[in-house]
Image 1 (tube, rainbow, N blue to C red):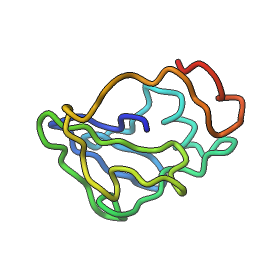
Image 2 (image 1 turned 90 degrees about the vertical axis):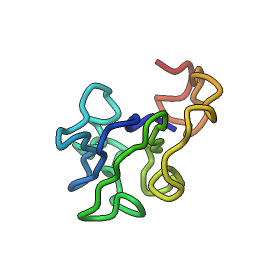
Image 3 (image 1 turned 180 degrees about the vertical axis):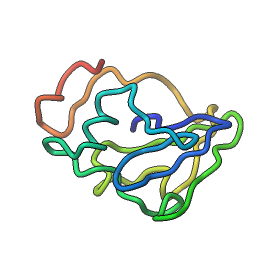
Image 4 (image 1 turned 90 degrees about the horizontal axis):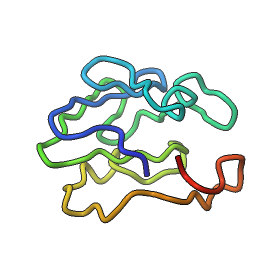
Length: 106
């Protein structure tokens, strides 16, 4: 999963674009590609805690995890934010899906 937001931020999805504190999240290429519905990306699905018209205030010391394949990902939209104590490391290899992104992570 990708970290969509951190403690103290307000996160939402509007028309497939991920927003933090009312600003589009655009510092990572996957956020931009998802917002623009490029290639295999369909935009972020507004569902669960981030259903249409909803936003979520991320608690201090928590993270909001999102899958890039938003329409087939069970993530913080459904189970809420994750306490920082639950994080065990940084991703170093993408093994699925078998696309051009497969391999060492950036």
